[in-house]
Image 1 (tube, rainbow, N blue to C red):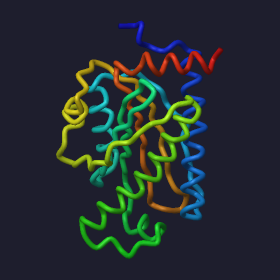
Image 2 (tube, one colour; image 1 turned 30 degrees about the vertical axis):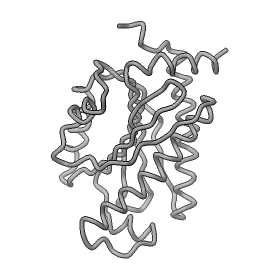
Image 3 (cartoon, rainbow, N blue to C red; image 1 turned 90 degrees about the horizontal axis):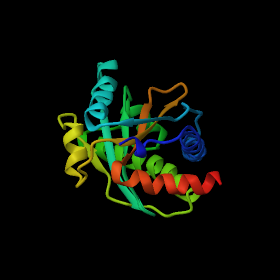
Image 4 (cartoon, helix red, strand yellow; image 1 turned 180 degrees about the vertical axis):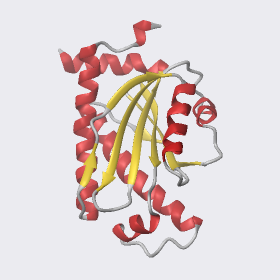
Length: 204
C-alpha cells in the first residue's frame, strides 16, 4: 500500500500548489465580498473513509452549531475526487449580507447561499489546482451534505470503493464576520498515481 503514499517532495509540492490555488480562491472571495479572508496553510494527509468521517465529526463537535456541507465531485487528467466545503459556526445572515442577498428566510434560501459560496470557492480552488497541474477538471453538480448523512457512506456511494484517500484540508475564515469553513479536497486511491505523475513532472 505504501507505494501510494507521497514522498516528502511530492507532499511539499502538493501543499505549495494548493497554497497558490487557495490564495487565488481566497483573493477571489475577498474581492467579491470586499472583506479580508484568513487562510490556513494546507494540510496534506492520507486518510481512510472512517478517518475522514471522524475528522468531519470532530469539526461538528467543536461548535454547538449545525455543520453544513456541500460536496462536489471533479474529474480530469486521470485524477478524480471530491471537494467538500464544510461550514462551521457560520452565521448565514452574515454570509447573505456579504453576498448582497436578502436575509436568509428559509432553508431554500440557505441552500442557495451554500451552493453559491461552494461554487465560488471550490471552483476557484480546483481551477487553480488544475491549471498548475496542466490539466482541466470537469465538475459534478454540488450536493448538500446533510447533517444526518454519514460521510463515509457518501464517499463510498460515489462509485469509489477505496480504502484510503489523499486529503488536503484548508480552513477559511472571514475577519470580523461569523463565517468559517473548511475545504477538504479528497482524492481517491485510484487517482493518487495520476496525481503523483503530475507532481513528479512539476518537480523535475
